[in-house]
Image 1: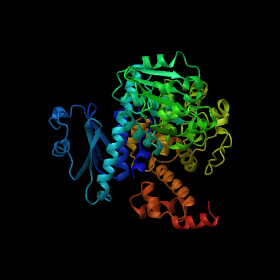
Image 2: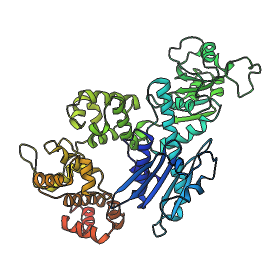
Image 3: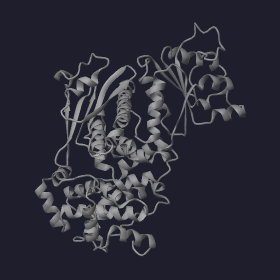
Image 4: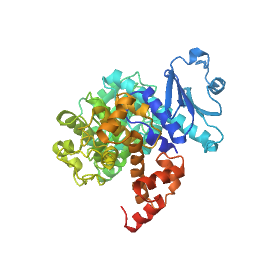
Length: 530
């Protein structure tokens, strides 16, 4: 269930409050709950409610000043909040950090809504995730202050959540750390976060590039005394220098007895190689590996983290000074998700930087990729708008709702170029948000036009209505799900696509397709219907 919530959480957030809003919205939407509250120390309290098919969010920046919470209390905050919650039937969990409770999350969970029995376990997981996310932003603030670059770990995939757990535990230890991973993975970033979130954060952070190291090990350890010494690509360190390091490390193996006069940095090392194999080959010091390999983690390559690609692309666009919502298209995201990224994050940054400058269209699309970074699209089929009819010379098929349905689902901003900008934004938003309740007022806000004008644009440019087109988008996606999943219950398909009433779904499906969902599935399975 947690994966389902995190998949709904937005990937364009650039601050912890924005991400907290996305997380609460995703939780209420996924669980179909009426309200929720998230309080985090130094951020305030966020209250969210379902109102007329819309989630309304309100921040209380001075929650403590309202007398609800005494921030000096080390524990017992649950009772203080519970007595002041603005909604009934609530279940909650504290948000823990190593220093104690720093916040809480509460959900209004009426007894008639399914899943309440599992609420405590889910709330505990959500609270833990909130803690990890706030810690990521804490590390980002440290990096902005120390390096002038607000870098942070990105993504909510299971692989990145495993790294969050490692980061939390490693940051509060003094043991050496060994970080492995392919070229371009975030090894140095994770090492910086370990230092930033630990007790040495105000001490030196010394980074040595072992391929061409400057100075001697004695210099490195002296400069990093009481802080952290990061040895990047330690597998590239000349063997003569490797042999000097074990004598300077604060041995955990009782191999060096006179260590009182030695500098005392914590050592973190990164590598792209299998050091155990290098030891067997005789090209890496066995003693050094023994002194380093206490806390170890392997960073996953991007090809194993397709769920993080959109968030990583958004972060890369921000590093180029670009707003992701203005340039990041679904077509580009889809191509990137299906690419292997042998250079991992380094390659992704280069691709985004090139397309930011060279892309001919406001929204980066397939044509930009084919022209400037063609290897990204190699061996990936050109998406075919199967439902689109033959069009005129201008490429527009006004009056055919199936064409606009597929354009919206595919996120084909280029095919929508001729439309009014507000209508184009509306269709792209509908194509991404068809599973939840969406009113004309909400859509108009996303399109930056008034509801009455947006309604006019639907009629005048598309010859259809918002309600009718939204229904077609949902049914089109239902056809895809039914064709690809022969065993998924029809009821689950209906719920997945935003229909709470099965009879309404079946009636809408028959009206548009001409068959019932079951008849369509049988035909798709036998190959007689597409």
